[in-house]
Amino acid sequence: MKDLKFNRHRRLRGSANIRAMVRETGLYKEDFIYPIFVVEGENVKQEISSMPGVYHFSMDRLGEELDEVVELGIPSVILFGVPNDKDAVGSEAYHDHAITQEAIRFAKERHPELLVIADTCLCQYTDHGHCGVIEDGVILNDESLDLLARTAVSQAKAGADIIAPSNMMDGFVAAIRYGLDQAGFQHIPIMSYAVKYASAYYGPFREAAHSTPQFGDRKTYQMDPANRLEALREAASDVEEGADYLMVKPALSYLDVVREVRDNFNLPIVAYNVSGEYAMVKAAALNGWVDEEKIVLETLLSMKRAGADIIMTYHAKDAVRWLEGK
Ligand code: PBG
Ligand code: ZN
Image 1 (tube, helix red, strand yellow):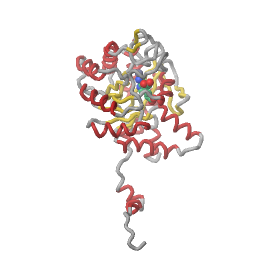
Image 2: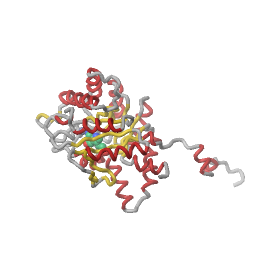
Image 3: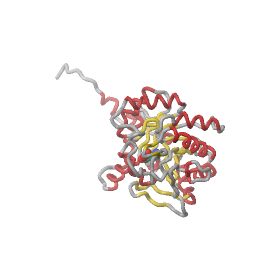
Image 4: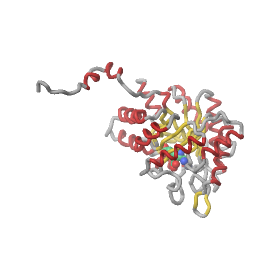
């Protein structure tokens, strides 16, 4: 053993201080975007059964949730309005006084500094639950773009700071950028759900947003989970069309894709830690099978390590409390 040669990696792990000194990535409250679901009605604060700790709020109860987010120092929220009335063309998506627009208006009035992000899609608003308009069972691409642009403009008019289109029609960034610019919203950034897979991890969200497709699936517009190169093509198109951020969604099963997009593009990268990822961790934690705090912080850190700058996560409020020892 006398001349044995090896490296002493443990030298840099010997104490908490030396580990902190050489730590490569970290989690900060500024990294987080917190999703909130808003429903019609009065005095509603109802837990979503597959997402313990996440609620449906009616407008008159939304303030308490926003106050908590702001008090914790989380700089941004994304709002998902869930309307009662749905129709074939998703009229409630682009109506100036529909639920999402009113929620945006309310949030900006109550907390002008809070960044309010609008999810721009049609599936919560259409009676068929698809993200675009339909003819003979086919989801039409170009016909959907006009409605999306109208949705984005009405969200910007209501005060949204950032438009986050999630619908995966081709050309959605170009159409929304054009629509926003024409309406005088050149300064409003687009956070594109550029790389969005047709994933089973959206299950709990669809229960929460009542947006399950009533026939078929989303595989003709969302991406095949088997594909990595296609993610680069999707991201490249969105960059060309004027996206200001690139999102990868879901996050946990797609950390390789987060890294790939990080290495190939120089825009801020967002990872969406989606509802099914949240539900799995919560279920295990509630059974006492995993240590929730440690599992969540490790999971979120893995997204930063993979190259995400920003994380959209239902764990955001808890994560900030844990990070700050509250
Ligand atoms: C709407 C939308 C979805 C999610 C965000 N925006 C659902 C879907 O595409 O089916 C999923 C978010 C989550 O699961 O947390 N297009
Ligand atoms: Zn959709």
